[in-house]
Length: 387
Image (tube, rainbow, N blue to C red; front, side, top):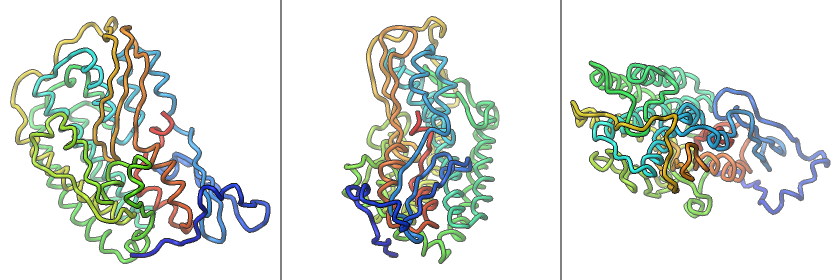
């Protein structure tokens, strides 16, 4: 395994850097929009070509969702929550809807359980496909990005067929889902999974057997196992270090207890192992989607009847609902005071920890050319930080 550079500045020594000495260069990476590395900004202190200090700066994208939600009716927040994690908005839909259902005592039909599970696994796959193209591109391998963006578009085609929208779906609503599957849709899902699986075989061959990618990614951004609980690291970043945590298994929500799968883990959480693990989870999502299609009820209601949304008041109470998104634990803490609007909404996105606390520490000692690759390997979405 390639060793990281040892020129690391511990947090306590950051204030001792004499930036006027001429020894260091202060430069900014971002903000410019393309992808994870451009939606936020890093203030880097460079010595030669090695990063010795980093401060993250956010606020350049969608922000302020939590306070905006307190000023809107319960149902009016559904077009809003999707923007918190644009590449996988359905997790916001699910967590928010499930929180309202728990507070209001609503039980959703079984057909809605399966349709929600299908929606979450489809967007999970689409998000991973977007991510892996960015990971390869950060190391100069643009071909992979061309392939995987195309495959992601195939998944978005399915969402357009199911919901009418490609990016924001507003499909998961309190009481169930907005509609049933159109004729022929499940067949299209299986056909698309066959195409994507075949293309993923090519991605694995071209990307993970590339000696340049291996040399640059192995040993980059190593996360020790004892950081996992200390920093609250979740998802593939934690599982790559050997931690067997997956909320789909641990919480057993929706139809996941009825599906056959086990959490995938690694041994060394560096940029290479994290990318290998996410590739394996893409294959796993394809398998889960096939299982969901095979078990999807052919008939039955897909939504419970709700009160008039303009006058709907949720009983007073509080709850926290979490799900396993592509990046780890994603949760909504919702408080109701019995009125027609939320009293408080707090979103727990994994990006806050991974993109700020962990990134600032991991990047010290890294070559400037590998900063983008490290940042993408943590798989973060800046709007979650700015929420």
